[in-house]
Amino acid sequence: MSLSPEITYEYYFKDASIHYCKEHGCLRVTNDFEDSVILHGITEANIDTFIQLYNINVKNKKEVNDEE
Image (spheres, rainbow, N blue to C red):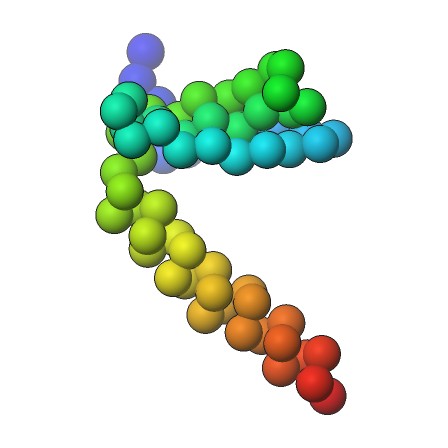
């Protein structure tokens, strides 16, 4: 079964941790290091882009709001 764009899965984590595995090309989101969701097909470039955009769109906006 392939995932289609019309489907969205939503998970809630009480104590989330995020880990990237370069060897397997996957991102693992775990709940208190027990239950986890593994996303395959994520590259280092995807992670780098995410960090860059996160810093621009979230971190920088937060810092500007904190200064005001």
